[in-house]
Structures are given as C-alpha cells and as structure tokens.
Length: 345
Image (tube, rainbow, N blue to C red; front, side, top):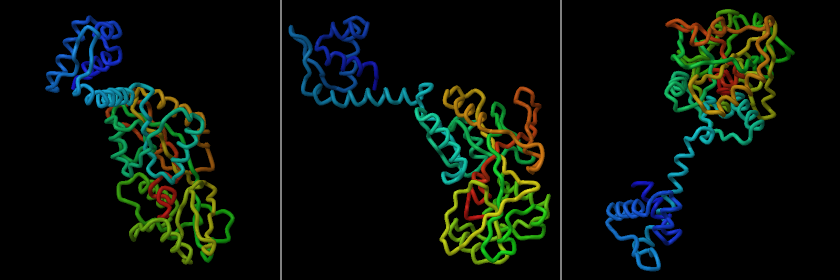
C-alpha cells in the first residue's frame, strides 16, 4: 500500500477539504485527487463523497480511517528504527550474567538516553560474521585466535583485561591459600567442562596450560553452574578457573574459595569488535566510554597469550591480519571461563 496515498487520505480527513489538504501537503488539489483515487482503486471502495461543504467520509472511509492512522504510525516507527541515532545499538555480550554485560550496564548508567539491544551469540564465528554483515553493531570477543583473520573492514580494540582466580572447595589442598602463582598449579587438574574445540576461550586456556604445565580437563557435559558448584564443593582434587568479577552465588554450606593468581596474574583479554563504516553515533559513544575506562595492560606481572598482542589497523594490514590485542574480557565473558559459564571452570 502506498504510504503517500494513505497520508494524503488522512490529511483530507483532518481538514475535510481537498484544497486545504493540498495546501498542508504542499501539492496541488489535482495531485490530492489523483492520490485518493489511486487509493480507492487499490481498495475497491469509495472513501469520500464530495459536495459544497467539502469532503465527507463514506461508511467504507470511516471503517478504513483508524487502520490508516495505525498504518502511518507503524510506517513512521519503521523509518525511525533505522534513522541514524534512533535505532537501538545492538551489542553481543556472550552471556547476560557475565562481567561483559556489566560493562554494558556501566555504559547504560553513564548514557541512559542510549537505547541498547543486548544479544548473546555464543559462537565467536557467528558473532564476527554478524558484525561483518551488519546484523549487530558490536561484539566482545578475545581476538584473535592463532591464525584467525578479522574480515576486512572489521576492527577490534582492547577494552577489558580480567584476572583469573582459582575456585576450590573447602577441602582442596589450596583452599587455605591467600594467593597462588600459576607455577604452583603445574600438574594439577583444572576442570572446565564445556571447553569446545576451536573456541576462543579454549585456545586461551590451552595456551595457559601449556605455559604453566596445568592440566585442563574438559571431560563431561556442562550441566550449568549449580552442578559445577556442587562438584567443586565436595571435591578434594578438582578446581576450576573463574574471572575476578564473575558474579557467583552458592549455598553457605558449600564454603567455596576464590584464590587470586599472582606472579604473573593471568589476564583473560577481550576486545570490542565493530565495523569501521558503521555510522551509528551510539557505537562511537560506546567505544569512547570503554576506551576511556581501559587502563591498558601492565608491562610486567601479568600473563596473556602472545596472540593477544595488538595488530595494525586494517589500512596497514596485508592480506592476512596478525593477532590483535583481545579486548580483555572479564574472564566472565570467556565462555570457557567460569564467568561466561560459571558452570565450568
């Protein structure tokens, strides 16, 4: 249905004169008549009767009027939904209960006027493809995995590095430790069910394990946080990793322990990923907010995989992108971490 013709119909109804409607629309009375006639032809009914007193609605015109107004309102909303600055900013956070979602909540508190549409795309390839295709505005991911390339025109910048903690039950050998070094975990079994082959968090933990001699055990299905907490609480040998800001709550009787890792502190890095030609003004505001809050990674005392180092901008890249500093994720957004999936270490 022709929106312009429907708008012309409503304008005539409002002023009850074709000539006055023409003036309000800045067109000729003849153009008004043609538009109304075309609409009547499409509908197969007469909408107006005209006499010396003006234009009066027929019974069919009266029946059509409320739907015409609704139609115009919907059309206006459809246009507004994609008008720059009016559409909600669509951002993927992997999980709504993770600390990356907390980053977005902080942005919302700082910019309550900006509407957000928060999605949870678990798979990294799906999320990056969605950024590339323009179906989302941004995602938080650890980039790049060894050998990964970002699509041309897609950029990433580090925004958050979160320290890892060891998570144990009260009878674990390290339960009373105030802090541990990664080297002290050499040969120990760290249970992380649900670490999927090829996932960015799996690549992270594989390299962490190789660097410090840790055993990452991903055997067993991921039943969620409650079963994981129950298993860790009752075990003397199993432990898992959680990120520093992972929001975990457990029964008082579990007496679980969170132990910081130091010298060096393993950091789970996450970046904000976006398309460079995305004109949404709220995306620029989000980038400024996160960049201003990111203190940068310390030069010493921390550990992160080599492939999380920054890469040059797209304009400087060759056919292949080198790894770029993963925007540090609170290990929470790392699906393989207990933050992203508290149910798995």
